[in-house]
Length: 82
Image 1 (cartoon, rainbow, N blue to C red):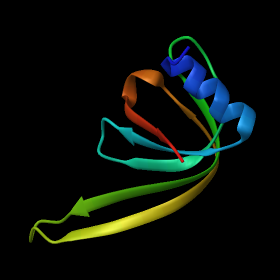
Image 2: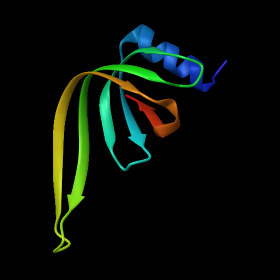
Image 3: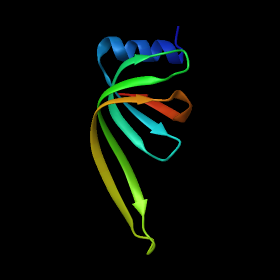
């Protein structure tokens, strides 16, 4: 059966990377290690991509590496397994 939880279980079992779009306009690229019924995720090897607009309206793009991260489920907008 195809539902969001089977998608997450397959992603964890196959160790496939996933892209996560969050409510605060950030994108996370990494591997899911665990999840629960509220869609809280434990992630590893995460690359966070985000942009900042300064007072002159110039947008700068940033990225940072996070080795381990727990993401609260209510901040997730979209999950894209790769």
